[in-house]
Image 1 (tube, rainbow, N blue to C red):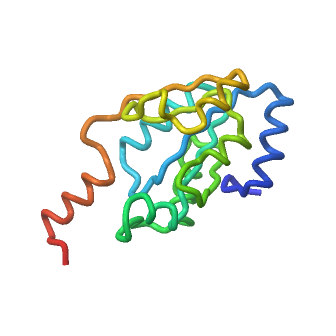
Image 2 (cartoon, one colour):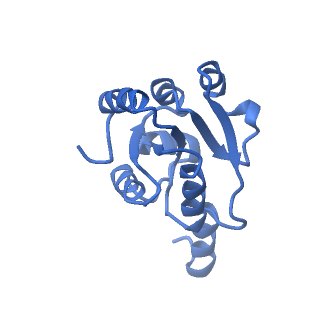
Image 3 (cartoon, rainbow, N blue to C red):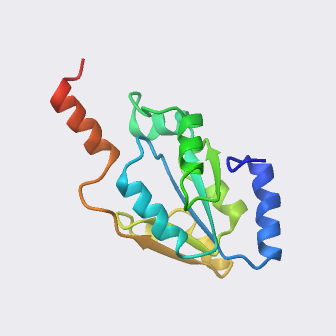
Length: 160
């Protein structure tokens, strides 16, 4: 089994991690066109625990959230790339618009999102806190985003 896992594998891995008393951190995102902000965010998330599990939106999920022109990079490639970043221990794709189902399975010790999220609005907050976990936000690296990269490409080379 590699670092990109399905829900069934995730259940077994999470059970083993609990038995081993490993502190699990969970975050999620699209991770389309990996940039410095992604790397710093994932590094900060990993520093909050022993194991970092990342939920990556499927292509259909991204299209519903961000529109028909996204993602730029396919789900299999995004999952592969994220799984090969040093802070990341496991990646699981999810098809829903939110990672609630995934969070319900992982029941992380720490649930992390970017600081652009209000903690009270983070999906899965209630279930994580009911299980004794924490919900935290991490500051982004300023002026680093996939959208800004796409905008710069369009500005320089046009939208055709």
